[in-house]
Amino acid sequence: MRAFRRSVLVALAAVSLTILGSAAHAAATKSRATPALTDANIAAIVLAANTIDIDSAHVALDKSTNDAVKAFAQQMVTDHTSVNDKAKALAAKLSLTPQPNGTSRSLLSTSKAKRARMARLTGAAFDKAYLDNEITYHQAVIDMLNKKLVPGAKNAELKDLLTSVQPAFDAHLQHAKETRAALKE
Image 1 (cartoon, rainbow, N blue to C red):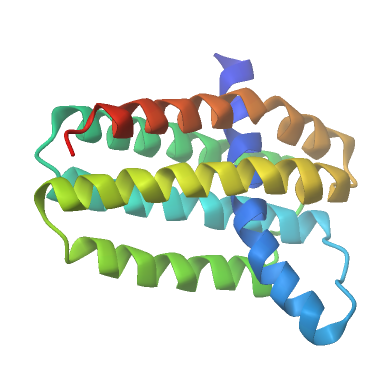
Image 2 (cartoon, rainbow, N blue to C red):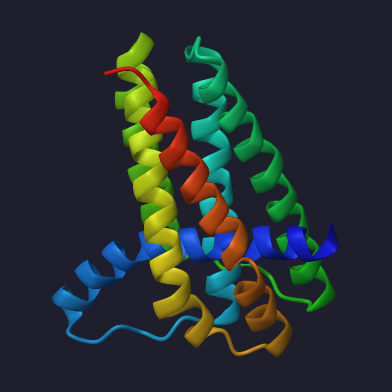
């Protein structure tokens, strides 16, 4: 159970960094130099990424009438809340104050706009949009975890946590794909 929770925390960090990838790419294009992420930046991104998925799942719990979609959303709330709790505990243990940054702020504002668009949908259209978003989001997090977060983490404990969460993100991605495939077109 402890390893799973660690995995979920790492996974959340990965998701946020994957989404961060788009924001980082845009920033790099503007400035021609991408600043290195600090562990405090990574912590803020992890918290933002978890919060994003929790908030999206709450919308799904309120709007969906599909039992499979609701079950998936509840799992996202449970797992990502656990990851946020673990991330906060690790940050406290390391005396690390998460430092909001352009990436974490961009993730939060972009996801807020996406959630607002999804919230206007109903029925099967909502379910499809929610699951499509979850598939894209988790894949982006996995990519960011591998390309930015793990390589960017300086603290060994944080790096280990990020590495161990990969299986949870993979499981979330697979679950989202299976749930989406089961929806009637």
